[in-house]
Length: 276
Image (cartoon, rainbow, N blue to C red):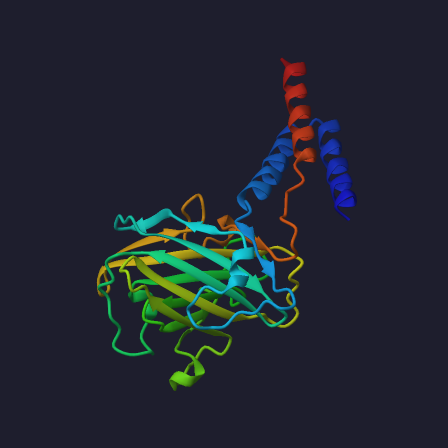
């Protein structure tokens, strides 16, 4: 399937070359390179084998050790901060489980109740783009999940979606039905750990790439002077879906087939030399 796709693309590019439509050729090649590069892999999830299990308790179960650690260490915006984190993702037939270790020695924020906007506290957010669509989207397909250091959750379905506060058991009028989570502040004062459980949407294919991004909110005080630290190497925030990384869950890290791209670059270079 990949070979057929690349063969068709090569034929179209060669037609543009033969027609001396060099501008169209170069523009198309630039699009291909950009599309391949902007989804740099963030990490590899791990399928839970028989005998391995995860409990939603804020403790790092052994199963997480099999997942590729994902660093959350790039400043996205707002105030400066030295807070960092590391995330681990595993999955089973029903859920993806995410464990995030946050290194933050100054937890000053407190929420009034479980139905508060948890992103206004020291907290972790993650965006899951199930279709890995690779474009900025504001529809209701990506899941935005939030969990504060006190264990309060909130969420949205898409940037244009309504916010939901609290789990079903918290008794709110708009609970999050597909997300649950818990958090624990470490006794040694080094930070806190968050654990998310996100239900897999019906029909999602875990053998395909799934776009994912993590972000830590570090507040100087309640709702005042926030620093945002992201897992995306280029520092983009959650909703820049075209620029975030992705997870693979099938046990095989995804590697873009760049051979074709380099061949096209060589052809462009040859054309440039020949026309000089």
